[in-house]
Image (cartoon, rainbow, N blue to C red):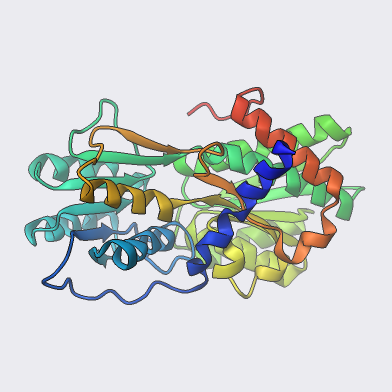
Length: 347
């Protein structure tokens, strides 16, 4: 019974994040009465990317509602903006600055040294050794991607038994994207081993998180090569791959958040999404500062075990995923937690 409960909990992570159904609210200027002032510096994808920038902002909206925090965001238009945007918040006396994405690692480290009295949290980056006023926020995305890769392989195998194929459309080839690809591919390989199948997989890195048109082109190319399930990884670029899946009549798997809610046009082709609970992680980081327990110099790691990552519900496909596959996914989740399955990630 514990196994069945586990995957149910992993999948129902999304239900507590229904706020993701809406685009980020327009930020308001911090008020005079604030428990804390927290600023967010986005990556170039922007807070409306239906993915990790948006979900991070939703964590700060939660902090506003529940903790009395005043928050604001600045959208970076280019990598050259990172230091300038961080500096703007620091000079305005913000208590905490949340930076979003692997690419902000260098800028965050530099600015944290210049502003040692400001607390920082950075999503998708960890420092070794740690920086005293910075908490890294990272995720074992390979664990959740392994599960969705396994499920995608099952789906491709049943829908196209003669030539089942899965494919991914990814943004930039950096570790926080590569970890999804590694888990996804390992999950497909494991499905083949367990079922004597021959599901193939392939994919492409576009090199940009803000290129939905190119993502769509690459998705169409993969579909022309026979791919049955598209995994969109990497902001608006990955979303473009899912648009191709919708228009060409194949299926998709979302990423970062439950994209059934954030991509309404594509929701009916999404079997599931690989989720990172950035909102909860960011909320917890802000709360720790408010309570005097901020863990600067340390790293938060979201895993299947602590519900920091997981698979979204199947939504429209709920009745089409057989009980035996759900059972297999439960058992795989347990083995991933125990460490008895290798996800293929070596980062």
